[in-house]
Image (tube, rainbow, N blue to C red; front, side, top):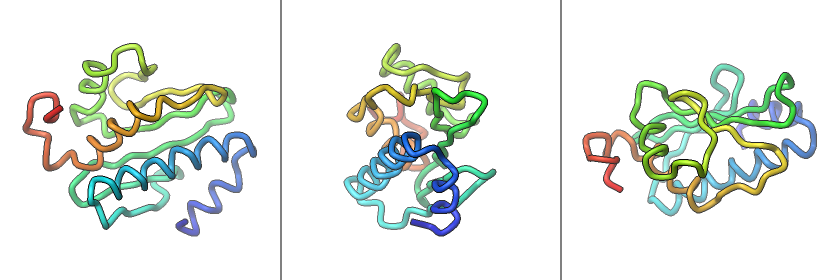
Length: 134
């Protein structure tokens, strides 16, 4: 884990850190399955951020002002959230065209989320395709 990201994780409540580590692990698993060998992990705007050379940035964070939730953020200038809405509708809660919102206590919809993460990690290669090639 990147040292800055490790320090950020240390600021989260224990239950939040567990859930966000699941998200982090899923990002790395998806990258590996997609053959993405260079995945950059760093803090961007104070939030854990992940990007591949062929993709669009993925960030996530927990905010104390919404203690029961965390968000996974995507670049709002992409077609990612619109595609997720088309593919998965009510599976996720959306925050405009920039984020997926999750309750800390909910089980992650891992299959659907993994697909969304894959689309983001490969975005530059698939952005010209209808529904990003799904």
